[in-house]
Image (cartoon, rainbow, N blue to C red; front, side):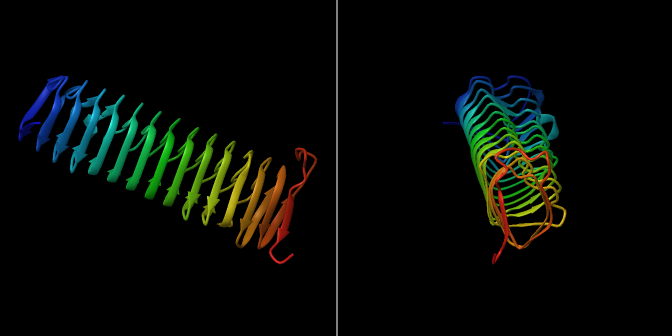
Length: 282
């Protein structure tokens, strides 16, 4: 493997079609596509300032690096990435990628990030300004995670999340086969139009959660006082510790809670309209 130490590159495609290359303390100045069409790349303690540095790359590790704002859309159409201990200041990262693992990564401007990706693992990752994070992605495993940003995980498939704090309006819309354990979920309109969304030991807050959901499961969850008008047109099996402020027209299943502030069952309820609501101990 060839090693380059302390070099500075700029302009168009300075390292195009490189293979078996290690970069140490290298700076990629403004330009375009520094490492396009590459494979087996290692980057350590590098700084990326130019746009599109890693496109169509197969097999690369990124450690202790920084992607400045100018390195937008840095990793697209690539596969087999391991990124650790890295700061990503650039938006629109990780598109159309397969098999990527991020550990101890911070992305403070994560708008439109992780779109159309498959095989994603995140551990100890923090993201902010993360609107539309994970759009149309699948096969995702996340642990010890913090997120601020709306419309996240829309249309995702096969997702498992553990020990997360997610502040996101419209999270998990249109998802299939998502399970969230031991997490805090804050934001209105959670999980609408989802299929087989399962929440275990989660704390939920925000108006009108979990409506139009199919085969929804809540196990040992709690719902904040602002969780009103919950479960409208949902098929659900839920156990909630403590009260639910209001429930509106659940379609079918069962909901067990400490109490119900209000139960709304009106002429707009959808068939089969047989959801059983009961208080603990009844």
